[in-house]
Amino acid sequence: MNLLRSSLKIFSGSITGSALQFLGIAYFARVLGPSSMGVFFLFQALLGMVAIPADFGLRGAVEKRISEGESQGRYLSSAILLKIPPVMIIVAGIFVFRPWINNYLGAEVAALLAIALILQEASQLTIVVLKGELRVGETAVLEVVRQATWLGVGGMLVSQGLGARALIYGLLAGLFLVFSWGCFKISVIPQYPSRGHASSLFNYGKYNAISSVGGYFYSWMDVAIIGLFLTQAHVGAYEVAWRITTVVILLSRSIATAVFPQFSEWSGEGAKNRIKDVIPQVLTPSLILVIPSFFGTVLFSKEILGLVFGVEYEIAWLALIILMFDQVTEAAQVVFGRSLQALDRPDLAARATAFGVILNLILNIILVSSFGITGAAIATMVASLFSGLILHFLYLSKIISIKIPYAELLWCVLAALCMTFLLVPIRWLVTVNSIIELLVVIALGTVLYMATILLSPSLRSSIFKHYNNVVGEN
Image 1 (cartoon, rainbow, N blue to C red):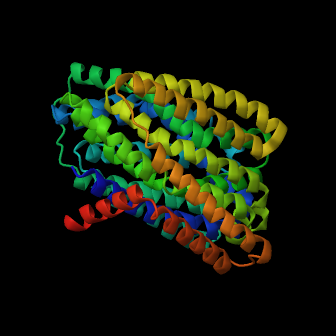
Image 2: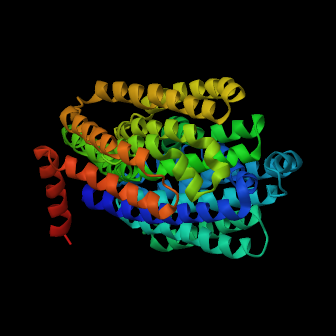
Image 3: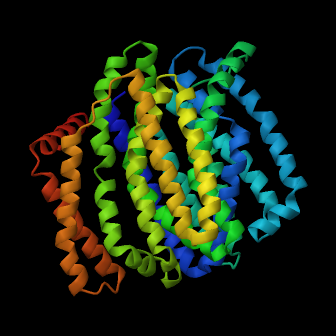
């Protein structure tokens, strides 16, 4: 598997899917307002929460075991049998607690939550099977299908006056299409399950579940707590800010997604030196887009929120800056975390994540009640820095020696600072009053940053080398 080409395929699919999502959120945010958007975001948050016990880390375990190349069909059928009981129990619980759930979400959508859980678990299982088959690049189109369906169906139903329900129906339609398409694409055929294969999945999954908790936690727990202490409008504004920051980390996540099955295969072959050599090569690409995005957000956070989504979302301008800084640490963490899991040490990744989950929960409860959505952003940033970056790095460095490309990363920071210094006078002299003007300023900043990046001989050589590798294999 070509890691670069797989990463670029995933990135292309992710950036296309995120562009569709971004356009959808921008449109729906203006049409529905922050309160209705808050209902939808709370629905997604609760879906993420109930998905944790429903999956219990099995998705990661399936990807890991199938990528090892042995007994793939038996692992798949064993995983299906393991997933059915917890999903059914949680679905039953949703209907039992339906009045409370509807009251919390602000709409009568508990039954839709149960359907969404089933569709999500089924669709995600097909995706991890494809990844385990080392066909990571082929999963890129599924993200585009999901987002395009959400935007199309949601947009059509919003025009019919269904409000937040329209977005939920679009979400359900997208999950169903991903599941159908994924079933068509996978080549692993389920075989007779066994207790040994189920035990192997469970033993890996119980640690991977904690890492999964961390992923959902940082994505949704702060939203859930904001929903308890503040209003749905605050939920909508904060989640819009969060969604903006997730766009800049797409390349980092694409790289981490691509390296996992390959690292897993090398780990199974005892070729840890190959993993050690590749990690420094992927760290700089993981951070090269995130670093300038933070500096740009410091200058134009209010304009990004107000012009694109509406002035009522500007209340999250400081939270947006803090969350964008959080993505700088997250970009490195996703590489370290996935590397630990690929090296068959999900226990260490789980230990780091557990610390972050506890710290994030405590800080969210304290800071949201005192500082609102800004407090939620601070809690996420601090927890991510200590558990996501520092602990994952320390644990990984105990297994393999990690060479950090300090010179390249420092040059990226200097390039971002140069971009900022050149944009500051523009920020003072020109009032950005339209989306077109905002896009022009962002494009100018991008050109300035990339021009400075190319002044570095090592970065310039690396960029052209990667470009030639991709073009040469097409």
